[in-house]
Image (cartoon, rainbow, N blue to C red; front, top):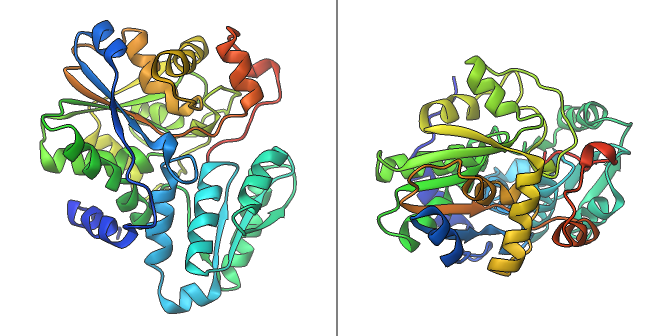
Amino acid sequence: MTETITLQHSYQARARIAGRIRQTAMMDSPTLSRLCGGQVALKLENSQITGSFKLRGAVNAVLSLTPEQRAAGVVGVSTGNHGRGLAYAAAQSGVRCVICMSELVPQNKVAGIRSHGAEVRIIGRSQDDAQAEAERLTAEGMTMLPPFDHPDVIAGQGTVALEMLEQMPGLQTVLVPLSGGGLISGVGMVMKAANPDIRVIGVSMERGAAMHASLQAGRPVQVEELPTLADSLGGGIGLDNAYTFKMTQALVNDAVLVSEAEIAAAIRHAYFEERQVIEGSGSVGIAALLAGKIKEPGRCAVLVSGQNIGMGLHKRIIDGEDADMAAESGGGADA
């Protein structure tokens, strides 16, 4: 039986991770406000220490380990922000960390994780191969800390919503990138506990949005993972999903999809109008607003989830290219 994750868990997480993560700014966006006829602000998790919100859940999960688990170390499977956050969190706590990755992961992402002191194991040519190695290490006694479907991870991600409520009183709409559901489960749980009338809207890319497809089907389903500018939103939610599917189903008012061109337009908007460098997955809320897909946003907070985009790709996009990741070797999922 899975435990119920509550507002109290996120308050406990905030106390636990205080001083180890950055309380990020909420920045008004006059241009988006004028465009949408509401009052729009951006929650800048792209300025988090490791460049993404993932650090919150990772730090909370590592600090919640038992002494025995700390001694044995942690293992994760990742191609992106979760691995970086877990590596950083483990290093700060003096806990051994192994991140399992496939040969297909770009070297800059491998280097980013290694820079925080984690041991990286390159196994096979798929995430399934990397997962098998992580499960072997777990059988030997290490603790697996997954990227989203874990109570301490969800409670940790919910701390960003506690900040948002304090920074923007009277909040009416929250736009949250939607992938495995760890972020939106934590945010939705906190927002609905504070005010059930707050609209929580998940935003995904049109290409391979697993949680969106699962919500449509009424159960966790597999989808084909497709190249996308929002690569950190790729990957499945797990057919044996224990927490995030049900929480997303219960807490999220709506889920919308944005196209690759709309994602690119949002990255350009963030750079030229907001002076922010953001990755494709972090831009989807802005993309939905620019495309007119959010009706009557009112007092609206857009969660900008991360900045970890290759700067060469970023330059191509801000120079006007609608980069077609399907025609290139795409990045991996944010697992």
